[in-house]
Image: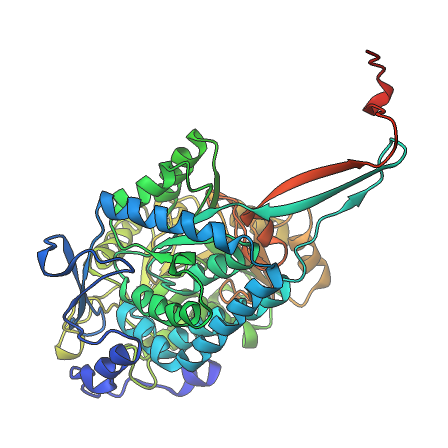
Amino acid sequence: MKQALEEAVATGTDVQDHDHHGIRQVLRELGIQDHNAAWSTGLEWGGADNKNTRTIHSPADGQVIGTVAMATAEDYEAVVAKAQEAFKTWRTVPAPKRGEIVRQIGNKLRDYKDALGKLVSYEMGKILQEGLGEVQEMIDICDFAVGLSRQLHGLTMHSERPAHRMYEQYHPLGVVGIISAFNFPVAVWSWNAMLAAVCGDTCIWKPSEKTPLTGVAVQHIIKDVLKDNDLPEGIFNLIIGDAEIGAKMAADGRVPLVSATGSTRMGKKVGEAVGARLGKSLLELGGNNAIILTEHADLGIALPGIVFGAVGTCGQRCTSTRRLIIHDSIYDDVKARLLKIYPNLPIGHPLQDGTLVGPLIDQDSVNGFKSALAAVQKEGGKLLIGGEVLEGDKYATGTYVTPAIVEAQNEYATVQDETFAPILYLIKYSGEVTAAIDLQNGVRQGLSSSIFTLNMREAETFLSYGGSDCGIANVNIGTSGAEIGGAFGGEKETGGGRESGSDAWKVYMRRQTNTINYSTTLPLAQGIKFDV
């Protein structure tokens, strides 16, 4: 990354004819034969008679990738019934055998990594290296889940009653609903679906309507594995629809767990609907992530982490770095270095070699980017660089922007909100590291946080009880780039959910305490006497 930032410059190569990047071949390889066809999502709905369709354009070059049929309320009912029926079979398969199916899915993803990674990049707009990395996350979580399938353990406790055994065990929940966001169109689904699968659950996946074709492709890959093992397709279900389908899932008592990734606004609606029926929700919502640079920071490793965090995925990661809190003794130096790096960031088509910054997902995101910059400047912020919408044939979609750096105050209303775009706010602090930690914690969101320091006391203070209030707290690592082995999620308006590694699997199961009496009497707990 550092070498790319120092050496790479935009080449100016014409990138308009991007079907020559092999997109049509990729679609065929992934089971999507005609990129202008309307596609079923696992049931025979849609097609020529369905007027409710959505045409998917690439944010990279505006080309049509495909047209999908949007599900109706009736389609939703059919998918739920299919998932419920498959659960009856899947829950009886021993967990290690379920892990074997997930292992095969991981191997299939290895086979299709290049093709699927390219489609992720083309449909979402992230650069190819990130698209391939996202598929690698899917492979990694499959590997994790395979091992987990032999470790779904409970505890054994000592009973106070003689000749009694007491223990706990975990059972599958049933149908798990997964609502994913456009920025990670396949990886976050896999975090949920692979763990749910080894736990014995079936799942219904509603991908973002902005990036449904990657979901269709994944469904084709998984379908082959299920067919080879004589298993029902309903173990993994896909439904493409708008917010009404998501609302149905959130309110549906037949779906005991809904895992939703997206904005805080969306998550509040899902949480309210699921909570009203006393269901379970796993929420991964907004982030307003900060990096603290103390006077003891190693800027050689900090700067690449800052820039990747701020501009990677064009600022459209939930873990993107939004705020950079800098000690006043190094503030001017850091600002000067960033202002030297930013003009040389290669912005362009995500499938073009050397590109580090692709497009925003759509025009709404561009408008949000412009509005936030206008608002923060009215509040007193100073735009130092960037903030432009690029024009010309190379950027004809109107979704390419220059990443912005703004000097600002933490209390500005715009800084307090999450803007899903490449805007980095520089915030100065003085004194002890506790002052920086207070600034970092002084927002409503609590996903990812980071400190760069070589001072052990500062690092430990950041990680202590009174330190970062986020679900993720890193030292000498940026805010982006979590590994699947650790539980992923955040606090406050980020929703409190945990996905991926550690013991996140427990949310996909129901817990049961069991007591077995193998004596010849019936003693009661707490010494209660009840003679009849």
